[in-house]
Image (cartoon, rainbow, N blue to C red):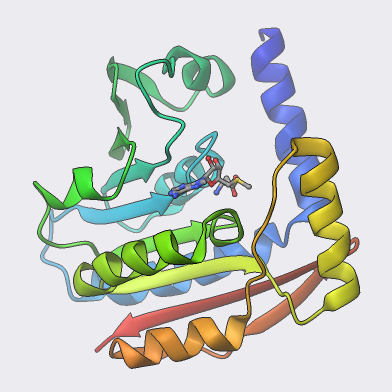
Length: 224
Ligand SMILES: C[S@@+](CC[C@H](N)C(=O)[O-])C[C@H]1O[C@@H](n2cnc3c(N)ncnc32)[C@H](O)[C@@H]1O
């Protein structure tokens, strides 16, 4: 096993301590099971992983999906300088098809810099997964992303930090500021919920989950 794969494995273990990995997986499973019931046999689940970063969740989702997946992994980091081989070196799951596409046993992944790249050639999105990304997006940009998504995406799963938990949220802000040099935006789950209801989604009960000092919440929304 190479050093990069070893570090990738170590990071996966570390996530279990700071992230509600099992609860997120259960939520994804529930939503995808529901959505796939309405699909024809052989259809691909069309999904977006918004702010996909290292593709940790993209991999988890495809591995456990009830059917084949076509994943659009969206992140501004996938620019001309991005080297897709860095992903391959950390995961034994994906194989490189070309500079913007990965393949695996039950799916394919397209790396996109913006959601606008997706909607040019994909009419239907079954599920959009957004983990710890909204708190990195300016409100005005988020509004335009959200408007585009809510027109197209049948379901949306969100995991983020609850800004109502002031002390814990401040610790997370400190973490992002000091360790990553990033400024973060407060995310209020009930405001997100109102936005989703306003776009015609049915929203699940918002689940708060603490891991160490992190005030996570998980919610999902489905259009009937
Ligand atoms: C904390 S990381 C989360 C990565 C991944 N979702 C995970 O949970 O492992 C936040 C990611 O959001 C991405 N991001 C920032 N602004 C974005 C935007 N406008 N659209 C999509 N992704 C964005 C960042 O580049 C970063 O990879």
